[in-house]
Image 1: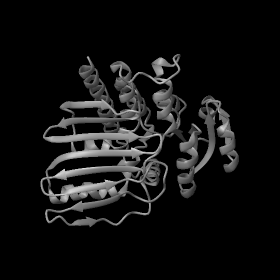
Image 2: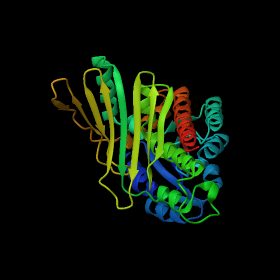
Image 3: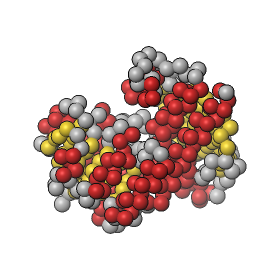
Image 4: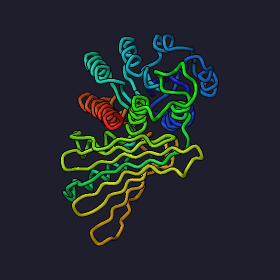
Length: 345
């Protein structure tokens, strides 16, 4: 029998991402309940599925038919709603990234899930992409020493982040108008939110091959929406760069890994696009590129398949890794924000 899913959140990502994916996995999951925060979108989405809908989270968490709670609400709500799902006795929680907004929240969430034996999975879909698995296998097989990593994003407009810079950061909610990114405190807050909201897609993968953050060398906001951050992880240099222009450039989402004798490129599809796995290619010392075959399923499908395996008991819940990934992202965002403030003083 499929596991019954209740989804907290009814934003564009639900309609464009999770519902189509779950619609392909009907042998594993059935969406039985959707809830929004008052937008009314849950009702329309639920009608298409023949599912229940509600406003707020209480009714969904009380619903005895819901086995799995998918937390797809704004990031500030994630930790609280996971804890509420645990308290409601739900079997599993799928949480969109990020897991939590602070290290303390992350510790509380992992502790509660571990104590209650609640299955937890964070939707860092790039980590589950088959192409990323092949890239890691290549690194291990050839024993190439990693020298540098770069993650470059050029993305079309995203309304959530354009609101951030058009209307002010959360602590400026009363002030309409574009925030002063020349103010280091404002810029640091925007940078932190962009790193924990967008860079976090790839940070678990980066941590896999370059654990630790020894020093943030530079951190800048790139107006209107973007950042450039560079840091050292031991002998590895890591650069994260984002641009999100109002006119909407061609999408690019690329991780490049330079080793002692080759270069690996992983090109991920844009968010919300179901186009199969990322494309991976390797450039050897002879200058020739070798391309890996793409998988028809993307990381979004793979993460839900993994959740099914966790529910069936055929895979372990990696609580320690989830906590370490969360701490890594939060620590990097805090260190980058501190570097920006230091330079701006």
